[in-house]
Length: 217
Image 1 (cartoon, rainbow, N blue to C red):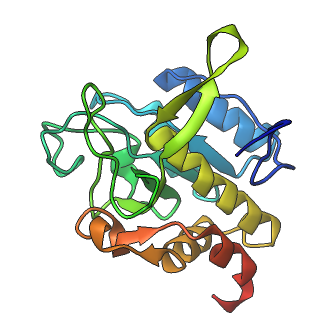
Image 2 (image 1 turned 45 degrees about the horizontal axis):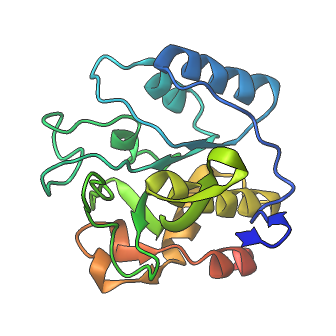
């Protein structure tokens, strides 16, 4: 969140490990981070629409003890759910959201009661009740702009890191199994009618509830 003196982080002690964006380099980076640096939580705010993409999908399968938090994407889908079929809207690793170690995040408006709607050239948030685990605010953020300033931005790439931070805090509290982290985030989310048939359980991330009672799951 923005402050008068800069930025504050939800999980300020987390060490950030950069990843490349292309399929093979990204797969290699995930493997190196997992094996060499013992990284167990990944934020993947990108996706591929090529059915031949294999490296990232293979890493998700090879490293079941690592949780990947994936942004649902912001692609024009003509109002259809992404990943319903391989065509016309495949998206990987979003389509791996059925895995225990993949948590897909949709983006909502500032109030958190509906997904980001298409406006102008912005197509809004992708959705799918089967593979999108939870929603989080994806609107109302600022990113560095030209001349040292900031500009208003939105999208699922800003929603996913909120869930990643929550997962990191749960991991720090001793919940290391990706499936248990995923379950807790889904189970402690707030029900929102506007997310029905869009998100599993129609839930909006409730970070405070997720991290304050971790031993009750």
